Image (cartoon, rainbow, N blue to C red; front, side, top):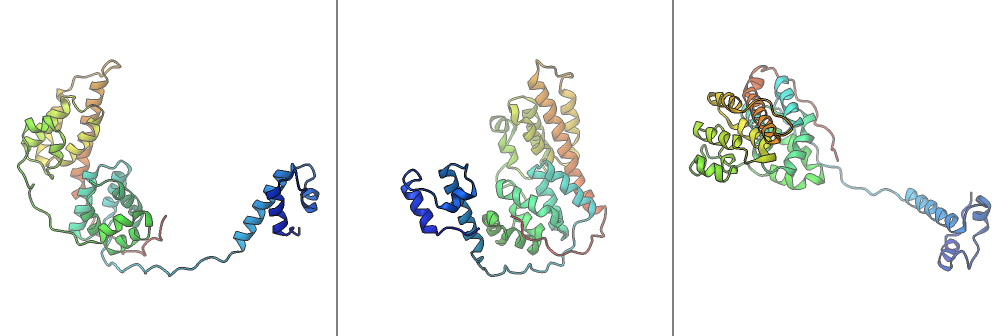
Length: 289
């Protein structure tokens, strides 16, 4: 179909279809269509044709991904990372990334998007160990997505050294009861007295709906020698939470979450040590929006 001159269509639109009749080809195309509808639909089609005919812009090709000879983490560790990302607890992911960085192995590319998306929104995910674990290829991958530009800038910076111990004294139980988050500022593994204080706060019921998240953070920080504290915490809870005891259900769930987090934390080193034969690195994935 041959289109009417665009200026004729514009003139009709400006004057209004009640003052100027439609061009003949528009009325012939659909005699039953209301005049304003026919005019607007023709304008939409013309705009689409105009945009489709416009040549695409050009840009420089992105820099090629750098080589990285570091092997992938073993399959057991990759499987564990997938489970940790499905229900992310930053303390557990930090432990996984630190273990990978210490062994000079990397997360598989299928995990890079989830790690970057989480790091971009969760400041408690350690960007330093993330950069070390991802390696130059993983950091390059993050930089390809403009939505992660701030994260990419952080990952590209040199990783500063970390103190071996907390800067300040370990808070006592009174301080932890007043501000439960104080305990979470102490890096893992915790001394036993801090673990006892945090679990007493958890069982005290003052955290409400935050209990499960706090329990996961506590479980991820317990040392292997203090896992018996979780059994003691579970034994201290009354049995049989009913409908009239929502607070008790929250505490039971929080203790169960803490136990699961502690089990996952204990499995991190085992997952890396189960299989020392990691596959040869493959090409990095393409940019993802």
